Amino acid sequence: MRVADAFLAAHGRAPEGVWHAPGRVNLIGEHTDYNDGFVLPFALPWGVSAAVARRDDGVVAIRSLQAPDEAYTLTDLDRAEGWVRYAAGVVWALRDAGHDVGGADIVLDGDVPRGAGLSSSAALEVSVAVALDELYGLGLDRMTLARLAQRAENEFVGMPCGIMDQAASALSAEGHALFLDCRSLGHRNVPLDVSAAGYTFMIIDTGVHHELADGQYARRRQDCENAAKRLGVAALRDVTDLAAALARLTGDERKRVQHVVTENHRVEATVGLLRAGAVAEVGALLNASHLSLRDQFEVSSPELDVAVEAAVRGGARGARMTGGGFGGSAIALVPADRVDGVRDEVSRAYREREFAAPRFLPAVPSPGARRLA
Ligand code: GLA
Image 1 (cartoon, helix red, strand yellow):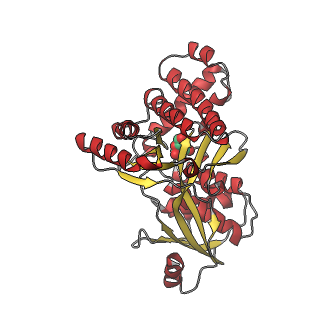
Image 2: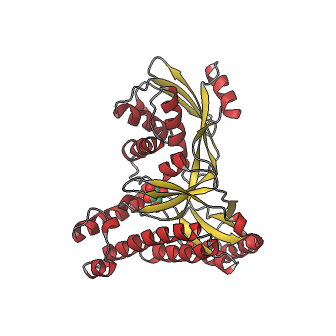
Image 3: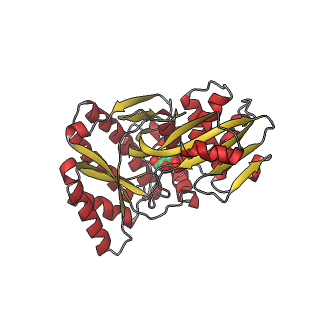
């Protein structure tokens, strides 16, 4: 395995094991996780592999095949910079929670398309978390590891993300989506065999890099928290009478609530349709989710809007932006015999608007984090 070979070359010994954690795409349930709501992501075939061995001097050495010129040997985790903070942050979070985690040599190899909003950072965090959990015999369950990875990102990296990405990476199952209640953290793997129904999921990577930490994400979170406070509920998840809530709000807060409350219903409806085997009907919910994210939550972008509209024109049953927004990717539910048509229509629309060419990736529901060797 390439990452094990690289480990041997760097450290003069074999790793104790190799662990893999996937990136994710979210089928539906956007900007609901930090409102204690519902999400329905699934793991992708791409991820991060971590070759790891313990060290007895407490030092954490981190390198990546994607950044061969940078190798960090950290006695002080806080000296980590850039992408290294995602890995160092996991060690910090484990230790801060009182777990006896010593040093480690860590070599990473990742293939999640960068900047596509497919959670390469969660994949990195979770790969390191599952490796250290096993090597140091911590015996933590997957949800606990996901929460520690989220804490690393919130407090060590400084990105106020919810739990969705780390949970999807840690807990997904092949051929399934992960239905997660972000309040109770209860979860179920929902069968997602759309190919049997003649469909395929297509990811359209707009190629526009999104910077979630640029403040917009945090501002949306703040809008939601302000609205919840005004409505006297712990989180927007608790809004049961939408009309009454909207009547008490104005401006941005009103729009944010409209999105979050209806999006939670769309997630539950999607799960119900999938269970009923009504795959095609999910398309309408994807379209509605996109309009809500565009008009009420205001996190779409021209590239995402054009991708979604063109995908549907080209024959997709439905499409929506996926992930935090402001660029990144869209996901489309496409009849197997319309894949070329959708691709052509989106490419044509992009040329017409003089956008850089998008990338098309097949999204196959893949296994969650696991040990490879
Ligand atoms: C990003 C965050 C997630 C979630 C989505 C929006 O991906 O990391 O926690 O909030 O945005 O649904």
